[in-house]
Image 1 (cartoon, rainbow, N blue to C red):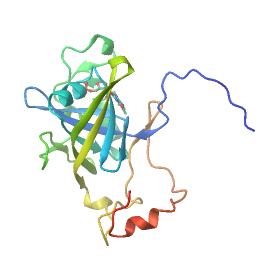
Image 2: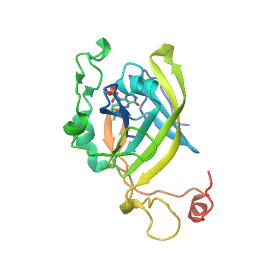
Image 3: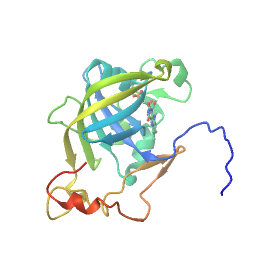
Image 4: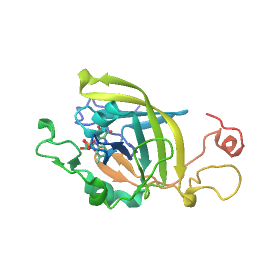
Length: 208
Ligand SMILES: Cc1cc2nc3c(=O)[nH]c(=O)nc-3n(C[C@H](O)[C@H](O)[C@H](O)COP(=O)(O)O)c2cc1C
């Protein structure tokens, strides 16, 4: 038996993909919020958002959002906008680590593309862009954060990461998501195996 030790970790970020959430500000401009508390189950996406952020405020006001998934080569663009918030004034608990930035698009060199079904634009540089609408928001951690359930409405994917033949499928050899673990960024590692259901994904019928 391997021995374990009870530890006191400052964060429990064991590794999840980075997502860039685009939302609409009260003045009609749009904001980009990097997060890593994001995962999908069926047609629902679940997000964890600090309640002091601009993304949380925007989502509570207008339930539209886009979940943009960057590839590993966008790491510097993501980190360029990382120390900023769309909130002004910057909330006390974010001072001095964060500064206010109105135009995260310019700061990260990101290009907006209009969405089909929601108001916030998509990020052209992200290979995956998921239009979604909030289904429910649950306050967690004594109101310090929000668990957001969003219904996926439309998924856009760069042609380069799709399989060239058959039904619409991501080619996992070509998709290199940016991951975040313990405040460090990682690219996709080697392919070490396949799930028993993987071949079923190549059938036209969608399986969950
Ligand atoms: C890679 C990365 C992952 C992050 N993950 C989250 C997260 O899951 N949830 C969250 O609320 N903030 C997360 N943050 C912090 C937010 O990006 C930060 O609070 C930012 O100021 C939010 O912007 P906004 O206030 O304009 O929405 C993350 C930051 C980075 C760089």
